[in-house]
Image (tube, rainbow, N blue to C red; front, top):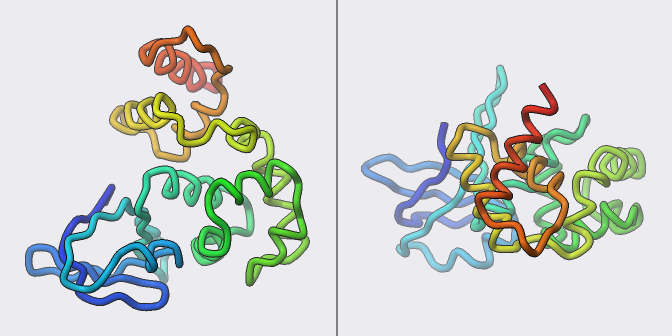
Length: 192
């Protein structure tokens, strides 16, 4: 599985980047925010990636930050949301605003995204509101959370699973990184 790609930016399109690495060029679908931040062709870039595999489709999706990848993978868990719709959501709304729209049940904001109708927006809210409640309250991007997610993914859990485990941890200012990792691991044992 490809966790990230790093190489020379060869081509930058409206919704993709072609990255050259060791004689191979990979086409990576990226959100609009990444297109704006990647810079000019010729520079060195690094993208956190998700390889989407289906019978008739093999595509690589890339993000500048691990939390964007995590949110993309979480969006894919919603029935009826495929990678194109998830990418459209992340292209139209910054991650914090998307979390706030889902957590705040802001159907109108979600419906402004091309390809997202009222039914799909309602499904997003229904299936993800509880999972993103902590993020919508202002806890996304905290350093300990990203370290816990990194530790869990190093143990073999997907980024989406790690994000769910982290969101289940109750905030505690006294909890060390090790305590938070143990609490996240308990989430998985309690689900079994």
